[in-house]
Length: 613
Ligand SMILES: Cc1cc2nc3c(=O)[nH]c(=O)nc-3n(C[C@H](O)[C@H](O)[C@H](O)COP(=O)(O)OP(=O)(O)OC[C@H]3O[C@@H](n4cnc5c(N)ncnc54)[C@H](O)[C@@H]3O)c2cc1C
Image 1 (cartoon, rainbow, N blue to C red):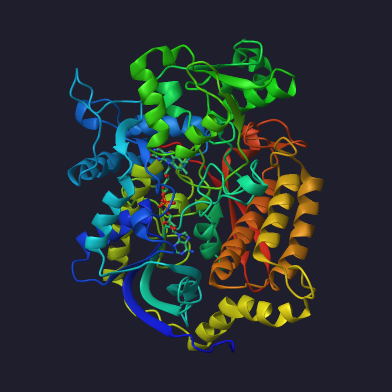
Image 2 (cartoon, rainbow, N blue to C red):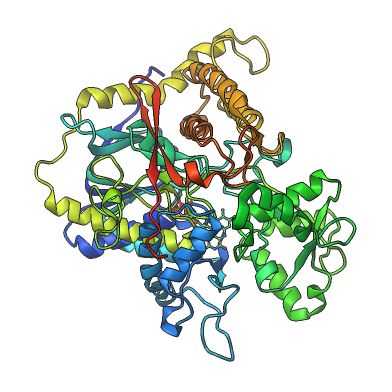
């Protein structure tokens, strides 16, 4: 097959293009229709929105709900909580904006048929913790997707978006996107007046604990492939807090969530000798981070830190004490149902390892790092804030508009706003879409796409198929060609590099300037080879572009980690050459901008405004 032989090009015109139909993308699609009755709203998704994204398998809890109707929490409380957990660095304007709207989103979910558990005594939603409410959530994603499907003019499933398009005249203005159908190989060109990126977070940029046969087993979904970062970075959008990768303490080998166990079943942890170890590391932690260790609740990273110290000191393995709680048949049921609704794999792992939590306290461990913007971490695009609440320095355009004109970000894609989770991500999609409609309405001249650019991108997108077709002639046996590398090999090289040089599991999350500098050198070599990936088929072509988005996101993580010369989040990673938190110099956001033409990164600081107090 010649490079373009037999392939159709499909052209789609949209007013609003939503890239990624996960939680934020569905929220954006739904809301865009509400405010833009006559607009053409198109959602494009690499899987099928029915079951795509991090919520694909379902969830057992909605982790962001204020409960304002019962005066349980106010948005200000939420901002304080998130800021505390992130060691002081949160875009409070964005977090407040989520807090004030998220309850309305959850009420919609219930209206659309999501079963939310109720406390039989009070009649209120059943709380799992201060911010979490419990749901029967196996069908959470299909319910949310139905709302998006009904709202969209068109949903394009199975289209992997590879690049964003720029306006021909204004090179800082978005004009659409291109990608390919992962089943038919057709090339798709979306011309759009505004684009909302909602393409999820990033797993598999650091080497996972589960390799070989278990490689697909990660905490964050293996299909979360960093497009939310790769797409905007490539066109020069400013990114923030990309060093703020997250490490999760989870049940060993299955990455099963621990929230319901701690919060609802009231389980606790102990070391190999039955001791509660966290208090032991109080003085050590205080030396690193000062009074942050005295905050309540103890920030997520610092709890990881205590676990890591205990294991390094010979106290491992750390176990969750389930034997007591599981004597109560109700709690035992809740414990199992928690997995069956969202992480069936953990139940299967326990069965395979002869672990019945009623009789054996299961081991916990810390995961490899992930990059995302909606959990206890806030990597993502630097976005403009709400007009009634953001300080002038955080406001240069429409709410959630990135530094690229007409490009909006939501969910994992949007930085500085942690603890959004599923409901907050959907909410942020809604917020971004409302602003995108306003942008559309105010739009003067429409953006124009450059046909030459589209042609260039088409050739680039499908080049790996051609590399393979030609290069495989040189192979006499096996799969190794002198002319190309396979996507899996590129990915594993990236994971190893990030792991060893940027603070992954192998080095106990430790890095420093010399390591990062060498890591960046090796990354340059990997980038050279990445131009020669060979893709055997469309599936491998998708893997290639997922890898390329991961590569760009990883490079950004490296630069941010190098720039922030302190250890702000011990337990997530350590700068060995700057082991202490340094509020005097680093109580700020880090921002980066990539210039695709020169390949150079520019780093800067931005102030943190504590608006809520
Ligand atoms: C294991 C786990 C447990 C969690 N537990 C909870 C919980 O208990 N409660 C809670 O509220 N939240 C929980 N969350 C968090 C929640 O799932 C996320 O916050 C939320 O899904 C983020 O929304 P998003 O839209 O940014 O990303 P996603 O929902 O992941 O959606 C991203 C979408 O973009 C698509 N996409 C990616 N790249 C491309 C591309 N190049 N082209 C086209 N489409 C693309 C993906 O296929 C996907 O559909 C959990 C997440 C995980 C992984």
